[in-house]
Length: 73
Image 1 (tube, helix red, strand yellow):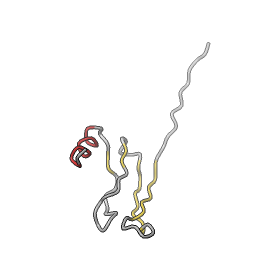
Image 2: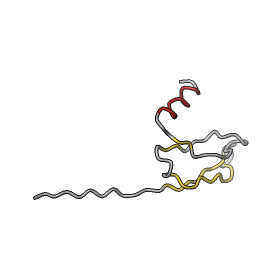
Image 3: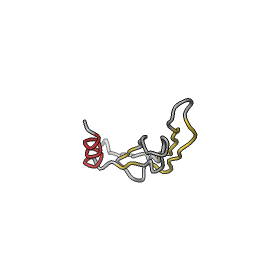
Image 4: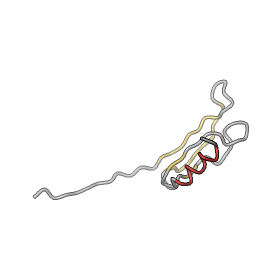
């Protein structure tokens, strides 16, 4: 798969990229994607990971329980 194929797949799947700041020497190379824009609240780019040139990412996920009620009578 080409990089354009990946981008097309993300767009075709209506996925949203939540990382907006550089994660590797100023470039956005790390991804947090979801199908719900409101699911990911805050993405923080932290310090570098050990000896890697990538930064750590931290994000908050908003989840809600779906309650189903049914009558068994």
